[in-house]
Image (cartoon, rainbow, N blue to C red):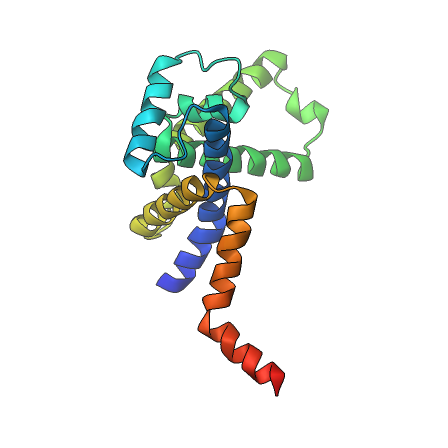
Length: 190
């Protein structure tokens, strides 16, 4: 059961967090706001400085960077913004697939529709802030749902430092030194 939950946590939250942290950290590395030579402690410290220094989240920041900083930056912020995006995308898809019709949407008036829309946005924002309760719901192991995105966050930050050629070299070195591949090569030669 734990293996299945680890697998589900890795797919549902780990991969999106890794991708999001890679993307956002890559932007910060490329812009020079973070140094590729810094260790993780320095990266965390610098992300905090960026957040405090730029309260308005500069014009250079894109939508995701602004949301990340609004959710606090760092691991917590990445996981919160990822959770928020997953919730929003899920609700949007559900709305499209189960479209109730314009008369049902505006049945109580446009004011009611707008009010309900903003209440829903606030609920999604608060749910994203408390992401660990969202993912640890329904009897799931909360520790797994915290540990998996944290490891994914670290992996995203690590890989964001690497250039494409460095990543290819890492992959080639892994394949070359993997004992399973050596056995497979020996068997294919016979």
